[in-house]
Image (tube, rainbow, N blue to C red; front, side):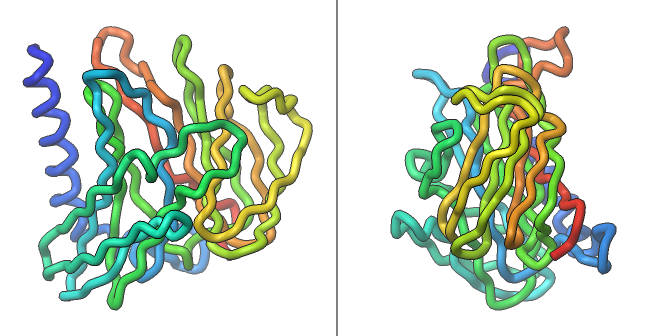
Length: 252
């Protein structure tokens, strides 16, 4: 299979997945309190994706709704904002500038969190795309987020695993207990505490698998987990950047 054909197939898969699933996302129930994946307020972040000279990063948020609605998507901490409209039964997308929308560092507070606000209910997912390293995640609304999580991540060869925390409120205190040592030297199973406000995000990376890392926060937060490059199928030369939204152990 040629390189260009592989890229076309990859993008076609994501677009087909979105169009087929968007009509059903609003009805997906979460375990506690019958929450769903649909809402009017969302917080998310894009973890670091490996990039090279010929591998530009494309960050895209896709939205759908059974009703005509409109809203805004923003990166509040840097002043970036864009309005959008959604037609019934049709998906719409917004491209996020990768230079301000993707996390770069480990264990450093970054002003890159993304906020979505709409007038009516929508469902959405996020796609982090680059040639050979791309994946997508359903985004849960703020009302479905919780205060306690266990991370599921992934690591392959020299590529770190990673997870990310995005708060929904100012002055959110978060206790993190990494399951393994981190890139910045945090020791395994030793808790540490950070404080985040709306618009900020906190990425953690490790050369080992961060699966099992425990996160407890004073206010509801969004948590993502995965790896910069995954190789679940060693027979393929096309790797996937893994980003998966973590379901909370509790519902706020």
